[in-house]
Amino acid sequence: MSLQPNLSDSWAKLDRAKTHCDVLKHEIDTAFRSKSNRIGLSVEYDDESGYHIFRADTFPDDQLTRWGLIVGDAIHNLRGALDHLAWALSLHGRDGRDPRNPTTVQFPIRKGPDPNRRPEDFRGGRKEALWDVLPHHRAIIDNSQPYKGWHGLSIHPLLRLNKLSNTDKHRVINPVLALTDTFVIYDSTFSDVGGEIVIPSFKTEAGLVEHGTEVTRVLVRPSNIQRNVKVAGDLSPLVCLPDLTGQAINLTDALDEITASVRHIVGQF
Image (cartoon, rainbow, N blue to C red; front, top):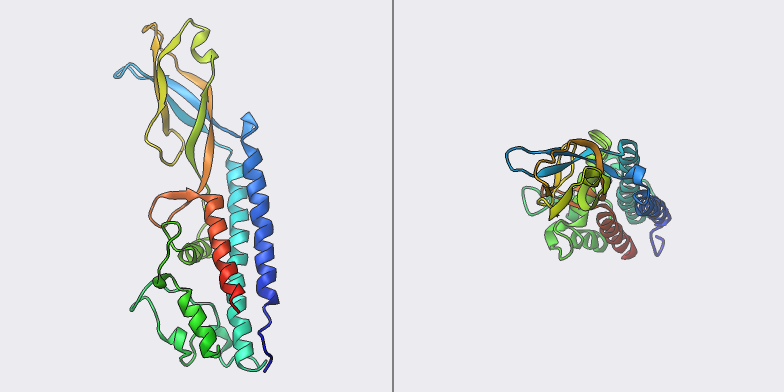
């Protein structure tokens, strides 16, 4: 038996994931410097409240789809790094021979104790994912599981990885969502008719931005000004991923934490 398992494929997968993440970060950092890439805001006068309400009106849909595809590529390689790890450990446990049941070999990700956790995975039970992995290697994998606890972001990175991977492979491209961050009201929206914002603009409760989402509302004087304008401002969004809690999390922060977790696991062998 060789002294160490060959983990070159796992490290190659991690390197490829980093490439995708670096591309994504660069594109997000530069995208909203251009007004044409920001979310356009329209404004309409609300008779009931007397406020002018600004709503999200246009989206860079092609860009969001592209980012969703890049996220999927990164997630595929990160999940693959773990599965290649399980395969390499199985070969190592068999002294280079093929695993006894190759179709079951994978890196298990278990949420919690029974019934969600299958103890066989970490005891090398017959025909289970880690059947041929050596006991001390199975113990390392067991200790990395989400049910062992987590002190980072709200969701354990392996659970997030598993969810994103399954969604991208079997259902839809992982949506890339935008939260309100900063916005601009164009001066010409009211100034060309002698209007002035007398109560500063304020954000509504932060949340996901969709077509028609209210971003802010303002009070304008004189009160007889009642404007409905298609292009009245723009919004620079915060690009996010859907969270398992139903909220959203900064996209690059989530990928950074998943990547660090996978790299730590592979680095223990």
